[in-house]
Amino acid sequence: MVNLTLTRRGDYVVRSALALARAFPSGQPRKIREVVAEMAVPPTFASQILADLVRAGLATSKAGRAGGYSLTRAPEDISLLEVVEAGEGPVRAERCTLGDGPCRWDRVCPLHDTWSAATAAFRASLAGASLADLAASDADLESGARVAPPDSHRAGGRSVALDDTVHVEMPAAALAEILPRLEARLPDALAVAYRDATPAGAPGPEDMWSPRPEEIVAMINLDRASSTGALTWECTRSSDAPDSRFEGTLEVVAVDAQRCELRCSGRLRPPPLFGETPEAPAGAMLRALLRHLARLAEDHAAARSTRAS
Image 1 (cartoon, rainbow, N blue to C red):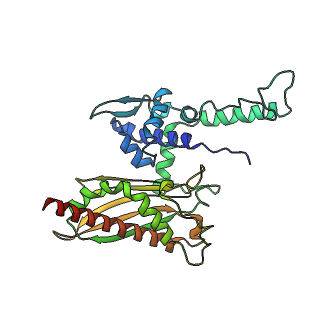
Image 2 (image 1 turned 60 degrees about the vertical axis):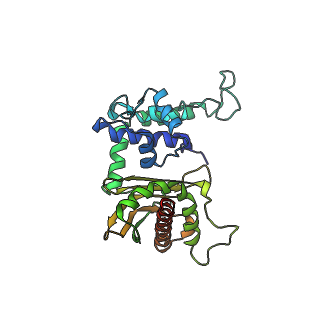
Image 3 (image 1 turned 90 degrees about the horizontal axis):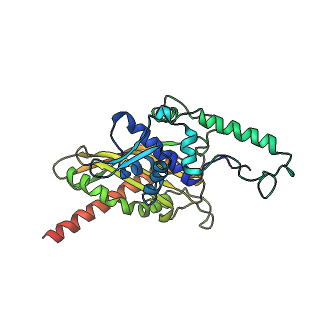
Protein backbone atom coordinates (compact mmCIF):
# COMPACT_ATOMS: atom_id res chain seq x y z
CA MET A 1 0.00 0.00 0.00
CA VAL A 2 1.22 3.55 -0.74
CA ASN A 3 2.13 5.27 2.52
CA LEU A 4 0.67 8.79 2.73
CA THR A 5 1.27 9.24 6.46
CA LEU A 6 3.88 11.42 8.12
CA THR A 7 7.02 9.99 9.64
CA ARG A 8 7.29 10.29 13.42
CA ARG A 9 9.49 13.37 13.01
CA GLY A 10 7.00 15.01 10.66
CA ASP A 11 4.18 14.14 13.06
CA TYR A 12 5.98 15.81 15.98
CA VAL A 13 6.85 18.89 13.92
CA VAL A 14 3.19 19.40 12.97
CA ARG A 15 2.10 18.89 16.58
CA SER A 16 4.69 21.40 17.82
CA ALA A 17 3.64 23.97 15.21
CA LEU A 18 0.04 23.47 16.32
CA ALA A 19 1.02 24.17 19.94
CA LEU A 20 2.74 27.42 18.88
CA ALA A 21 -0.30 28.38 16.79
CA ARG A 22 -2.56 27.93 19.82
CA ALA A 23 -0.32 30.27 21.83
CA PHE A 24 0.07 32.90 19.10
CA PRO A 25 -2.97 35.05 20.08
CA SER A 26 -1.61 35.46 23.62
CA GLY A 27 1.74 36.75 22.41
CA GLN A 28 3.45 34.50 24.96
CA PRO A 29 6.17 32.06 23.88
CA ARG A 30 5.82 28.37 24.65
CA LYS A 31 8.35 26.54 26.79
CA ILE A 32 9.61 23.16 25.60
CA ARG A 33 7.96 21.46 28.58
CA GLU A 34 4.61 23.04 27.64
CA VAL A 35 4.81 21.75 24.06
CA VAL A 36 5.79 18.32 25.41
CA ALA A 37 2.86 18.19 27.82
CA GLU A 38 0.26 19.54 25.41
CA MET A 39 1.20 17.59 22.30
CA ALA A 40 2.82 14.41 23.71
CA VAL A 41 6.09 15.13 21.93
CA PRO A 42 8.84 12.94 23.45
CA PRO A 43 10.88 15.18 25.77
CA THR A 44 14.15 13.70 24.50
CA PHE A 45 13.36 14.91 20.95
CA ALA A 46 11.41 18.10 21.65
CA SER A 47 14.35 20.51 21.30
CA GLN A 48 15.31 18.91 17.96
CA ILE A 49 11.74 19.08 16.69
CA LEU A 50 11.34 22.76 17.60
CA ALA A 51 14.75 23.45 16.03
CA ASP A 52 13.33 22.11 12.74
CA LEU A 53 10.71 24.87 12.85
CA VAL A 54 13.36 27.46 13.65
CA ARG A 55 15.59 26.32 10.76
CA ALA A 56 12.61 26.53 8.42
CA GLY A 57 12.02 30.13 9.49
CA LEU A 58 8.63 29.32 10.95
CA ALA A 59 9.56 29.81 14.60
CA THR A 60 11.99 31.76 16.72
CA SER A 61 13.49 30.94 20.08
CA LYS A 62 14.39 33.19 22.98
CA ALA A 63 16.46 32.18 25.99
CA GLY A 64 15.75 33.07 29.60
CA ARG A 65 12.90 32.72 32.06
CA ALA A 66 10.58 34.78 29.85
CA GLY A 67 11.74 33.01 26.71
CA GLY A 68 10.52 30.07 24.70
CA TYR A 69 9.38 29.38 21.14
CA SER A 70 7.04 31.54 19.05
CA LEU A 71 5.84 31.59 15.45
CA THR A 72 7.56 34.13 13.22
CA ARG A 73 4.30 34.81 11.38
CA ALA A 74 0.60 34.61 12.13
CA PRO A 75 -0.81 31.07 11.72
CA GLU A 76 -2.97 32.34 8.83
CA ASP A 77 0.23 33.20 6.94
CA ILE A 78 1.91 29.81 7.38
CA SER A 79 0.85 26.99 5.06
CA LEU A 80 0.59 23.38 6.10
CA LEU A 81 3.03 22.61 3.28
CA GLU A 82 5.70 24.74 4.98
CA VAL A 83 5.14 22.95 8.29
CA VAL A 84 5.22 19.47 6.77
CA GLU A 85 8.35 20.22 4.76
CA ALA A 86 10.05 21.54 7.92
CA GLY A 87 9.89 18.00 9.27
CA GLU A 88 9.83 15.82 6.16
CA GLY A 89 11.88 17.74 3.63
CA PRO A 90 10.58 18.60 0.15
CA VAL A 91 7.21 17.01 -0.65
CA ARG A 92 8.01 15.83 -4.14
CA ALA A 93 9.25 12.72 -5.89
CA GLU A 94 13.05 12.67 -5.86
CA ARG A 95 13.39 9.42 -7.79
CA CYS A 96 11.67 7.76 -10.72
CA THR A 97 8.40 6.19 -9.59
CA LEU A 98 9.05 2.91 -11.43
CA GLY A 99 12.83 3.00 -11.58
CA ASP A 100 15.76 3.11 -9.22
CA GLY A 101 17.12 6.55 -10.03
CA PRO A 102 16.24 10.08 -11.23
CA CYS A 103 13.97 10.37 -14.26
CA ARG A 104 15.95 10.95 -17.46
CA TRP A 105 14.40 12.27 -20.63
CA ASP A 106 15.83 9.37 -22.61
CA ARG A 107 14.11 6.86 -20.28
CA VAL A 108 10.99 8.46 -18.80
CA CYS A 109 8.71 5.91 -17.14
CA PRO A 110 5.05 5.70 -18.29
CA LEU A 111 3.86 6.77 -14.84
CA HIS A 112 5.84 10.02 -14.82
CA ASP A 113 3.16 12.43 -16.02
CA THR A 114 0.36 11.00 -13.89
CA TRP A 115 2.50 10.75 -10.76
CA SER A 116 3.85 14.28 -11.24
CA ALA A 117 0.31 15.64 -11.57
CA ALA A 118 -0.76 13.79 -8.39
CA THR A 119 2.25 15.14 -6.50
CA ALA A 120 1.51 18.68 -7.68
CA ALA A 121 -2.12 18.33 -6.56
CA PHE A 122 -1.00 17.02 -3.15
CA ARG A 123 1.40 19.95 -2.71
CA ALA A 124 -1.31 22.39 -3.78
CA SER A 125 -3.71 20.94 -1.19
CA LEU A 126 -1.15 21.34 1.60
CA ALA A 127 -0.22 24.82 0.38
CA GLY A 128 -3.89 25.84 0.36
CA ALA A 129 -4.38 24.98 4.03
CA SER A 130 -2.99 27.26 6.71
CA LEU A 131 -1.75 26.50 10.19
CA ALA A 132 -4.71 28.57 11.40
CA ASP A 133 -7.08 26.19 9.55
CA LEU A 134 -5.41 23.25 11.29
CA ALA A 135 -5.71 24.91 14.72
CA ALA A 136 -9.39 25.72 14.13
CA SER A 137 -10.13 22.14 13.06
CA ASP A 138 -8.29 20.83 16.13
CA ALA A 139 -10.31 23.11 18.42
CA ASP A 140 -13.58 21.97 16.82
CA LEU A 141 -12.69 18.30 17.23
CA GLU A 142 -11.66 18.88 20.84
CA SER A 143 -14.90 20.67 21.70
CA GLY A 144 -17.10 18.23 19.80
CA ALA A 145 -18.27 20.88 17.34
CA ARG A 146 -16.93 18.71 14.53
CA VAL A 147 -17.27 14.94 14.44
CA ALA A 148 -14.47 12.71 13.19
CA PRO A 149 -14.80 12.04 9.44
CA PRO A 150 -15.95 8.59 8.25
CA ASP A 151 -12.44 7.73 7.04
CA SER A 152 -10.80 8.71 10.33
CA HIS A 153 -7.80 6.57 11.23
CA ARG A 154 -8.26 7.03 14.98
CA ALA A 155 -8.38 3.34 15.85
CA GLY A 156 -11.48 2.92 13.73
CA GLY A 157 -12.63 6.42 14.68
CA ARG A 158 -13.33 5.31 18.26
CA SER A 159 -12.28 6.79 21.54
CA VAL A 160 -13.55 6.19 25.06
CA ALA A 161 -14.52 8.89 27.54
CA LEU A 162 -13.01 8.19 30.96
CA ASP A 163 -13.61 9.81 34.34
CA ASP A 164 -12.49 8.46 37.71
CA THR A 165 -11.44 9.54 41.20
CA VAL A 166 -9.30 7.98 43.94
CA HIS A 167 -8.69 9.07 47.53
CA VAL A 168 -5.17 9.93 48.65
CA GLU A 169 -4.09 10.09 52.28
CA MET A 170 -2.27 13.42 52.24
CA PRO A 171 -3.06 17.15 52.03
CA ALA A 172 -4.03 18.42 48.60
CA ALA A 173 -1.09 20.84 48.44
CA ALA A 174 1.36 18.01 49.14
CA LEU A 175 -0.07 15.82 46.36
CA ALA A 176 -0.01 18.72 43.86
CA GLU A 177 3.67 19.19 44.70
CA ILE A 178 4.55 15.49 44.42
CA LEU A 179 2.65 14.49 41.26
CA PRO A 180 5.02 16.12 38.71
CA ARG A 181 7.89 14.26 40.40
CA LEU A 182 6.20 10.98 39.53
CA GLU A 183 6.29 11.58 35.76
CA ALA A 184 9.35 9.35 35.33
CA ARG A 185 7.44 6.47 36.95
CA LEU A 186 4.43 6.77 34.64
CA PRO A 187 5.64 4.46 31.81
CA ASP A 188 6.16 1.58 34.27
CA ALA A 189 2.79 2.23 35.92
CA LEU A 190 1.00 2.38 32.56
CA ALA A 191 2.62 -0.82 31.30
CA VAL A 192 1.27 -2.64 34.35
CA ALA A 193 -2.16 -0.97 34.08
CA TYR A 194 -2.58 -1.96 30.41
CA ARG A 195 -1.54 -5.53 31.16
CA ASP A 196 -3.86 -5.88 34.16
CA ALA A 197 -6.80 -4.42 32.23
CA THR A 198 -6.52 -6.99 29.44
CA PRO A 199 -9.93 -8.71 29.08
CA ALA A 200 -10.24 -12.36 30.07
CA GLY A 201 -9.90 -14.70 27.12
CA ALA A 202 -7.54 -12.38 25.22
CA PRO A 203 -4.70 -13.96 23.22
CA GLY A 204 -1.81 -15.51 25.12
CA PRO A 205 1.38 -13.69 26.09
CA GLU A 206 3.02 -14.31 22.73
CA ASP A 207 0.21 -12.40 20.95
CA MET A 208 -0.76 -10.00 23.70
CA TRP A 209 -0.79 -6.25 23.10
CA SER A 210 1.08 -5.14 26.20
CA PRO A 211 3.41 -2.16 25.83
CA ARG A 212 6.80 -2.06 27.45
CA PRO A 213 7.73 1.05 29.45
CA GLU A 214 10.18 2.16 26.77
CA GLU A 215 7.30 2.18 24.25
CA ILE A 216 5.32 4.68 26.33
CA VAL A 217 5.67 8.47 26.37
CA ALA A 218 3.76 10.05 29.25
CA MET A 219 3.60 13.55 30.71
CA ILE A 220 2.12 15.28 33.76
CA ASN A 221 1.86 19.06 33.54
CA LEU A 222 0.29 20.26 36.80
CA ASP A 223 -0.06 23.85 37.97
CA ARG A 224 0.57 23.81 41.72
CA ALA A 225 -1.33 27.06 42.29
CA SER A 226 -4.61 25.71 40.87
CA SER A 227 -3.86 21.99 41.48
CA THR A 228 -5.04 21.23 37.95
CA GLY A 229 -3.24 20.26 34.77
CA ALA A 230 -2.87 17.84 31.89
CA LEU A 231 -2.14 14.12 31.75
CA THR A 232 -1.19 12.66 28.37
CA TRP A 233 0.37 9.46 27.15
CA GLU A 234 0.76 7.38 24.05
CA CYS A 235 1.89 3.80 23.53
CA THR A 236 3.50 2.84 20.23
CA ARG A 237 4.58 -0.71 19.35
CA SER A 238 5.95 0.29 15.92
CA SER A 239 6.98 3.36 13.94
CA ASP A 240 3.39 3.93 12.80
CA ALA A 241 0.64 5.87 14.57
CA PRO A 242 0.18 5.29 18.32
CA ASP A 243 -1.64 2.08 19.22
CA SER A 244 -3.23 3.79 22.21
CA ARG A 245 -3.33 7.37 23.41
CA PHE A 246 -4.88 9.36 26.22
CA GLU A 247 -5.43 13.10 26.57
CA GLY A 248 -7.05 14.41 29.72
CA THR A 249 -6.90 16.51 32.85
CA LEU A 250 -5.76 15.88 36.40
CA GLU A 251 -7.23 17.70 39.38
CA VAL A 252 -6.35 17.53 43.06
CA VAL A 253 -9.30 18.39 45.33
CA ALA A 254 -9.09 18.71 49.12
CA VAL A 255 -11.40 16.53 51.22
CA ASP A 256 -10.13 17.77 54.55
CA ALA A 257 -6.82 18.94 56.04
CA GLN A 258 -5.20 15.51 55.71
CA ARG A 259 -6.94 13.91 52.71
CA CYS A 260 -7.64 14.74 49.11
CA GLU A 261 -8.99 13.28 45.86
CA LEU A 262 -7.12 12.74 42.62
CA ARG A 263 -9.51 13.17 39.71
CA CYS A 264 -8.83 12.36 36.08
CA SER A 265 -11.02 12.75 33.00
CA GLY A 266 -10.30 12.59 29.29
CA ARG A 267 -10.49 10.39 26.21
CA LEU A 268 -8.59 7.20 25.50
CA ARG A 269 -7.88 5.70 22.12
CA PRO A 270 -8.09 2.05 23.21
CA PRO A 271 -5.64 -0.60 22.04
CA PRO A 272 -6.98 -3.30 19.71
CA LEU A 273 -6.87 -5.92 22.44
CA PHE A 274 -9.60 -4.11 24.39
CA GLY A 275 -12.01 -5.45 21.77
CA GLU A 276 -15.32 -4.18 20.41
CA THR A 277 -16.51 -2.99 23.84
CA PRO A 278 -13.44 -1.26 25.30
CA GLU A 279 -15.26 0.80 27.93
CA ALA A 280 -14.85 -1.69 30.81
CA PRO A 281 -11.14 -2.51 30.33
CA ALA A 282 -10.37 1.16 29.65
CA GLY A 283 -12.06 2.17 32.90
CA ALA A 284 -10.24 -0.56 34.79
CA MET A 285 -6.93 0.60 33.33
CA LEU A 286 -7.47 4.22 34.42
CA ARG A 287 -8.56 3.12 37.91
CA ALA A 288 -5.41 0.96 38.21
CA LEU A 289 -3.23 3.86 37.11
CA LEU A 290 -4.76 6.34 39.57
CA ARG A 291 -4.43 3.88 42.43
CA HIS A 292 -0.80 3.30 41.53
CA LEU A 293 -0.14 7.06 41.43
CA ALA A 294 -1.82 7.43 44.83
CA ARG A 295 0.38 4.71 46.33
CA LEU A 296 3.52 6.21 44.80
CA ALA A 297 2.63 9.66 46.17
CA GLU A 298 1.90 8.30 49.65
CA ASP A 299 5.17 6.32 49.66
CA HIS A 300 7.06 9.40 48.47
CA ALA A 301 5.56 11.52 51.25
CA ALA A 302 6.30 8.84 53.87
CA ALA A 303 9.92 8.51 52.74
CA ARG A 304 10.39 12.27 52.84
CA SER A 305 8.89 12.41 56.32
CA THR A 306 11.26 9.67 57.50
CA ARG A 307 14.28 11.49 56.13
CA ALA A 308 13.17 14.73 57.78
CA SER A 309 12.89 13.05 61.18
